[in-house]
Image (cartoon, rainbow, N blue to C red; front, side, top):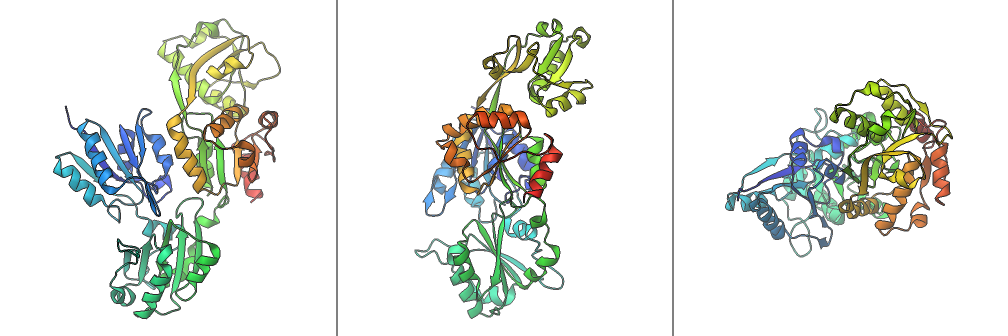
Length: 473
């Protein structure tokens, strides 16, 4: 049997836009992905639909897979002929144990590549407005592990060299040892007034910072209950942060959004929300199953109603695949939402919003069969991707969600179903969230499902939603 290949990939610090092109290409061809806790799970959505996704992450005081098991797993899957991606947060060569994994692969003569990533010790400070070097403040920079394998976990470092010889120091995963770190830096020569900043979940929309000095930062961390994952940055360059802070000034910074999803791919709305500084989890993840499309129904219809933008794409893909002359379809087109109408407009068709009439050929996925329509054309069948449910449950548990957005009425029922599949009680889950609906039809569906409804933008458009969220900050 032909051997597979292993890619040891740095996922970057959190913002999925910070993964390298080469790293993303590796994910897109993976048969198996072994990912850790600090690799943003959103990157898994770029994997082929049949990929095996395995969580090998480590949590403080609880290890899901020991390093030896990880090495054996990579070898086993590669020897079975699989393309394997080991997806690590940050850079695999910075406290990522990539040397041990590569050595195990080399021992078995398995081909592998190491794909660098952006390390959080540089990226998180930049997202907090701090370059780790600066001509006027810092000419040297060091990354340091803040725990070791000793019984008490205290790092055994050359404290004098760090304190006297390095201008900016980034300590990784060291919140528990912060008093020990500050004490030793002061003891070996760092001024007690040296600025310190902790950056938690750096480059995510949930990023938080806490600033102090070597003297008082430990007490502040206890009061604020700051925890890992955090970078501890020490150095005078922190003083310029107020001048060039940028990420935390984005209009939707602080919004942690759960976006109810109907499509199989990440949405443009999610992308726009993240660009404005929000942290976004799209839920649930769907798998699309192809079905034969009966286009002869379309040629016999006078009015065609498209249920979603995805159904527009599926319908016209079928027209192309079946080499059908589009001129044989003489019907007027309608959309169930403004987004659906825009999808038709982009293809050069005029369309109107659906009215109360039932005299349509309704084009949609298999869910429309349960809506009571007399005349339907099914373009696809979707099912919730069960492999992603435990991933989402962990993501939701780690985030501090404050906003839920339903972008369409079709998103409500599947969202509730998937939440139940995750073992989460809907009413209790929504209690602390602001529930926003895109349009009156969507709000009616939310209320019909017995869910709380807190408001909607003036129009069911992306631009109106962004404005609504910004004003409500």
